[in-house]
Image 1 (cartoon, rainbow, N blue to C red):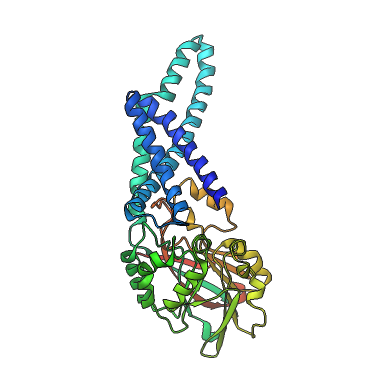
Image 2: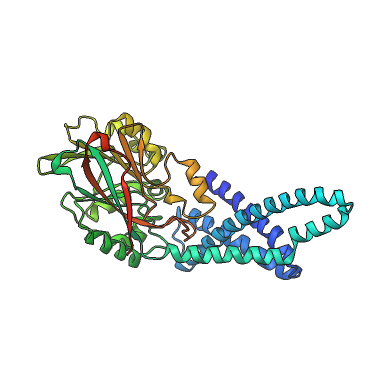
Length: 408
């Protein structure tokens, strides 16, 4: 875990240095204002990592948590600055190379070089870049706190038992209850989810960031959720950063069934649905009893008409395919949340979002998450409450499911 904090600290320090050299110095604010602003950026950007580290042994006061939340916004802003600076410099490099050829041909390389430096390091360019990053950040923060949409997904299943045709599953994922997401937001999520009237409710990990003793009151509205086939929970990676067993107990107190390499057989009419769940793929590094085993989750399972696996990370798809599941529900990626993390999340996971088909039989749905983590920002990756509906189709017609959105 400390390797994560070390790596994150180095990355954030690098982003702060980049912002200082490429934005603050060209603004020519004077030595003291530049030093103060640069120091404030560095301090705020490192504060969230400090609070995360302290939370493992101490309960940071609420004001410090709020300052850390502000720091997350700064981290988001610095991430956007990084993308814009790199994009600008690549464009200017191309302009410089193109213009350089023309300038040398015209015999005026010195004049061209001076103009290139002014474009690259000029005060106006720095102001425009800082303004663009600020507008992007403000829009993304606003989008993160808007009411979560409902994403309706039809999952086509060849030869599905007639009594399972139309079965609906409400999926929540990555709520990340913590300094930025509190009880009021969870009340709204619970209300919208319950209004969907799903047959089954699932929560695919990353319920909270912190200890149950501190955050369970903010998760309390989830106790109001109910469904004919019950509500079920599996751990995500963030449960292991605080107290995984404590969060499993908290989930059970909220009325969720918990699945740790386990399964249950659920019925709808004469149709039989096997629901299984696995711990996060990293769980075994924290608790030996939480090693990730999709095959163990269905060991000794009875015959069923449809097999559904709850697994926090899309990377579980390979084990899920070997274990013979029909559908896997995951989260973890947040759809990338905002740039540049959208690109990085797409590279780090086998599937980033939406309904995907893996290795012929298995379908995988990856939620973009119902909350957010880190910077309270979302851009082109809105949060979602997912309503999946199983649909019987002929084998010849089976294909990717239909996606639609309904705003709330």
